[in-house]
Image 1 (cartoon, rainbow, N blue to C red):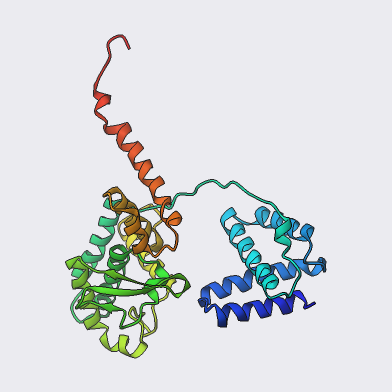
Image 2: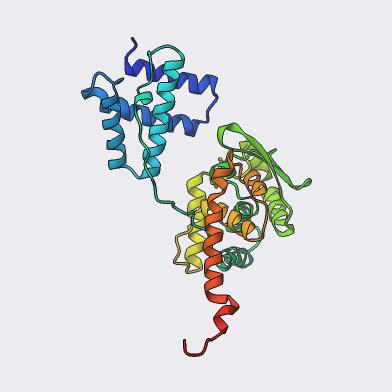
Length: 309
């Protein structure tokens, strides 16, 4: 039988060349499996039920439930592959029963007035910047990034991975490569968003054609996810917004607001690129929270007073 290290290497190559997983997913898989391998150095019989149960307990002890769950899923897929390929007789997961109830963590969205202040501050910064100035060029790019995040609800990684041909301003559409290399198309309909994208493309045309990616940093390279986080934080500070805002919260905000406008959840699922409707349904909990607040504060029953009560 192959060693754990050799088995991990074979599985990793399968994920890379046969399944065609993204670099980000491959890195996460390798990290999780290497972590298990290091822990198993003191447990040579890594195929036993007891070893696996002890490791699962350790994961839930040392990591947040969501991270632990992801690491267990990776491990389960690894053992399933070894069993299918007859590299082991049976996966030890067949003998393990575990079901951990987790508290529902609702995604945080940005209040619409806060988002309005953020975008207004970005446009205000642009207006105060002199023409033909490097800062003005960056301000236009910053606005284009934030406007597109809100207009499309894309993940920050998807936005930074956009290639030059993916954004078609003329036909008002863009192609997004999501998780598992799945492609989806998102229409860009807002006139202000289209206008700032045209301005951005005009200013960065040379850099875009040279680099190949759509959003470019000051060095002429692909704009990084971290740069977008810094960008959002910068404008939040300028607005004196105390709330911690992340690029991913633009995505949550789009989904929440569309749901509150009675948009069918399946359209939201398609827009966000969720493979399962279950993932999208978490936003219904946010909508119910908003409903509770509205009914508590604004329901007309509050205006009716019963005598002697």
